Image (cartoon, rainbow, N blue to C red):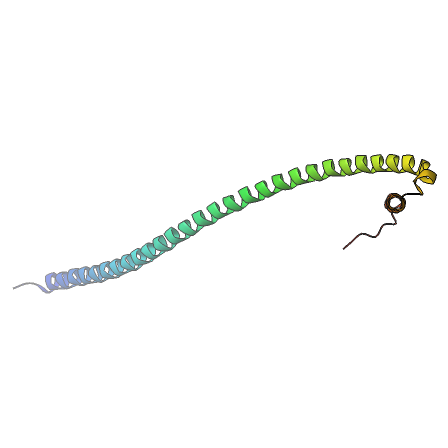
Length: 133
């Protein structure tokens, strides 16, 4: 027959094994929970990475469009400057033509259409002309 200290040792040993078994079960449950959370986070990160790539591509597309529009605006500005210079040149030429025709206005009195045109040119050059809206 076994002695009492031997039985007590076996009971204590079984108790330690049982506690260790319970701890291992809790640890396994904890690992399973963490594994589930990790898989869930992995799916979320994957989704966010896809969205980030899409936003990056969209941002690049918007940047390219903005650069193209800026380039177009610079070209348009240069063209407007050239047209302004051309308007100045033509205004100067018109003023010279007016001066020459005004010099001959006594002779041109016989041509009422020419006199009306001279009046229109004079108003245009003086800045009194009415511009249509």
